[in-house]
Amino acid sequence: MKINENISPMLLEEIDKPFNSKDYYFEVKLDGARTIAHLSKNGVYLQNKRFVDITATYPELKDINKQVNKECILDGELVILDRDGRPLFSGLQKRAHLKDAKKIKRLASELPAKFVAFDILYINGKDITNLPLTERENLLRQTVTPNSFIELSQGILEKGKELFEIVKANNMEGIVAKRLDSKYLIGKRTHNWLKIKNWKDEDFVIVGFTIESNKPKDLLLAQYKGKNLVLRSSIYFGFSKFDIDTILNFALDNLLHSPPYQITLLKEIKYDVIWIKPKLVCTVEYMLLTDNLGMRQPIFKGIRTDKAPTSCTLPKEFYAKLKSS
Amino acid sequence: MIKSAISFGLVYIPVTLNLVIKNNDIGFNMLHKKYNSRIRYIKTCPECDGEVQASDIVKGYEYDDDQYVTFDNDDFEKLKSKKDKTITILQFADLKDIDPIYYEKSYYVSPNGAEQAYSLLVNAMQKENKVAIAKSILGTKESLIVIRAKDGSLVMSTMYFYEEVQANPTKAVKAPAKNSEEYKLALNIIKSMTKPFKASDYKDDYHERLLNAIQTKINGKQIKQVVSNRPPNVINLLDALKKSLKEQEKAEEKPKIRRVK
Figure 1: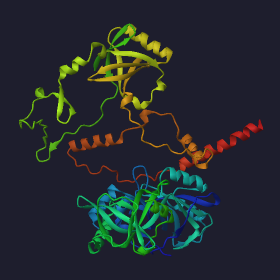
Figure 2: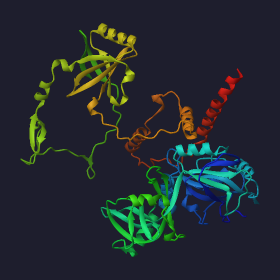
Figure 3: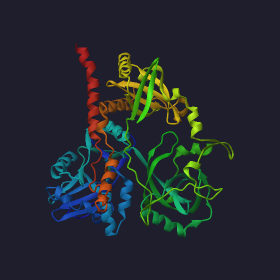
Figure 4: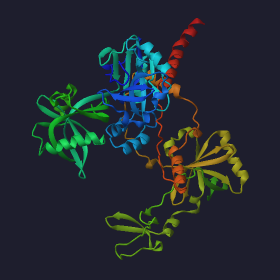
């Protein structure tokens, strides 16, 4: 391991229910972008999960190396916060794909980002991923002095259930549970690191969009039941320009006059619809509505290129609803 | 300031009413972008195509399509009797019986002569710990009124009538299981977040920012940023959690202490 050399972050396994255990450390999960920060005397290098250099996208973080007393590599979440300090994923979407330096500068001031550190992997030339989590946590706290642009993750021992309830009451994304003795396993997903989500995410096939006064309004999201597509939900076109352009460019070459496939509507559509070939897959995150299987405050998380449309299948809970409608 | 009088049994107390709430809204005018000139509203009539003067305007009630009965100021005045303009106390009641959804506007009620009678009413209401329910016409509208004694003087609030209040559209929700962990936790969170309410603790932040922005413009500077360029801290959930855990511990300890005794 070397400073400024890309690292694949340790991943989380998802489980359904929160639990309490003396062997675990529980942290608040923030809805941001997983980021590895390389901090040295020479400056800051920020990389994402896919080894993309995002340092220039967030110029407001260029001095966070002054908040550490040793050369180090930190793992954390890059977030944009609203005035109450809740992560605003839409803010991140507005910033993620900017190239124009002027725009980057303006948004850095309007929607400033913050790095929330939760782990330390390397100090002064030494790889410390083999140390247990408790020791790394201590070293992290000794190394970082938080300021407006770098903060330490919030966590508590043992009380996973109680932390999850507070997270739920505050409409936050979820919690993370890490074994106190866990080593940092680069790029690995093991049950030593778990996530329990308050929000749910699902993959959908984009089958088209509605049009209101000549502009795209809502994206139409469907899933497969056998060979048939079932239109399950729609989401407002208010996400990043990058994703919107991707979808609209794809749509230009893939327009359909009517859906040639069998499509069942779980949701009434009140506007004109442009249908496109069912080839694009996207991930949507939302809070659960318990009574009618609907989505509350859905967030468009991005296009997925690594998943086949046919593998986006309708959950069984919806079968009964299909019969009744 | 409104002049009125309270009628209470055979007693008649002249009073003046002053609004409790000052309108804090910042007014903006509509301007033509090109000249910064004020936009003027012209009332026009489709029959004669010309501007209509205020003196030529009457109010009409549409009782059928395009069929109106008209009212002028005299017609409205005739509907008010002298008695209606006074605030007539109709009954006394307990303040807690009034649902806050009925409250509209509040006024300070000051005596305007007959101070003895005023003081009598204030002190008697304080002694009995009751509020007066009254009716009056303020402006053009009949108002239901509640008068209460507060720190040695009277304060009144106009109230909406029962017929004005709409039915609540919220459907009945299922009650949670009384001994579920979630319910207990919710109780604990409420307990740990409870403190006496002080109105002065809360400020209208947007109003202050707007005032600052106006001042900045007057001083000839451009507004650079409305949003601060330093991010806030992540919402602190641990403090609330730790507080609630402490409350839980206390709740669990109490019965043990009793057993020892």
